[in-house]
Image (tube, rainbow, N blue to C red; front, side):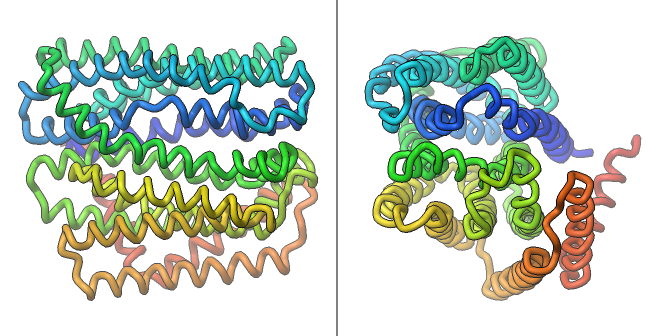
Length: 505
């Protein structure tokens, strides 16, 4: 198996293991959260403390830049520059984390949406906000170290560190919840997870560079300026991405109240979890695709990119269709009917995240090529558009939140694909072929979703929900394979290549 393919496979496997833990934390444990934490307090945390902490603490775009530059250097076998990049990036990340944490603490008095809570609940939200700031601060250091490890095609080491930290998070979270610590359990669990990633990632990066690759870590001011220059172009786009991902719940809380924020968050939780699951594929593939681009094999880079577009598009359509079909029944059995914000919200969010997933393939391609300025420009403008549309239209109905996500995702996704298609020389024939494939997939998915929502009875038990899911899986997968020869071809080739690659040479 080639190093790039092996790294991608292991990256995906460890990513899925971490996602399994995240599912337990973000889905299976929610009934326990709601039993231990008042609904209004939990909704306020989702929309203010947790959301603002994620938006305020940012690595200045450093992780994305580090992944691109070190992967490209490793592909070109430029080990002298690699050591300077890794050492300089780590020092920048540590200093940046300290500075951003100090700035973020000043936002605590400005947390919105707390006026409807009691004094004790407000105090809890603010204290947990400080803990989340500390967690994300330490997380910046850990993210920098993990980016270096992944860029050096060591997916097993990076994945092991993240998986162990997730398991520790779950253990601490459960222990504190059962001891009556309420919302503090979530915040402290995040802090300890980040601490483990930072410590283990830093040691792993040092060992990998100095002992395994015999690369001398160093800090060069010229390299520091280069990283800061590239990161500054990526910083606002990274902030904008977080604004777009967190703005919906934030503005629902501000304009419609914390109870609506909790309902909205729970309704789209399954969609966001599925997108997080699929995002592990992008995360695992990005270093390998960048390594491929850095090696100078541009025809292969182009072929792999178009193949990924169709494969990930089909996988996302399948996953989002199944999510829409099962979401109402799942929420009813999971926490109760009160948590479901309506089929319109669920359907529109599924469409929006499908569009986002297709756009992220182009996003990864631009990052692999180091086109940070294009990425930054698009996300900055669409984040402003996102906030403006939320302010103007959200009070007309909760479903406007995912509808606005759809508009912004379609805008930046179209811009990214325009740039990528021009850069790789994508022909009109190839474009028509891809559009035709997606049209068949989307049309069939809509037909299946409509049939289930209109004709299939609401499941009254977990067994009935599983049966509905299995029928949905069979219907969607069978339909995709029957109507798309290209998808059948990709599946046969990928399965064959993977099986042959794992055979001993």
